Image (cartoon, rainbow, N blue to C red):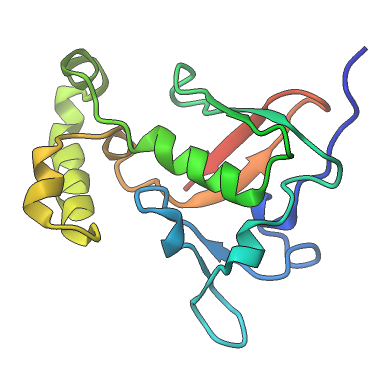
Length: 170
């Protein structure tokens, strides 16, 4: 018997004007303290701790698996016995894509035809990072760089009721 479908918090779903309170700007290349509401009475208002600590679903959810179609091996597993919060989902997505590529991954995932685009995405991420650009560059390519510039969170969807969630980026 499959588990009942959970209704995710609107912050975690694709933007829908009739359901979502505000569009969200979350570039997964940067830490979650950079997440902003785009059209709020005060434009670009950061999410507060209260926003981030909202339960991720309408019912207590302690485990969650998020798939990413482009790279199926990059599954995101979230577990929190007290119940998963929006913060846990956002942090897990950021952390999963902030992992440095191994030399093997760099050779296999960065196609020679896309090398210049990946380098451009890498340089831009390093330039915009909160820390020193030179330090960020020394860490090398990360998973997020392979996505080129498709790093904006477009919500989670669930193709099958009770199944894994799918991360949508654009």
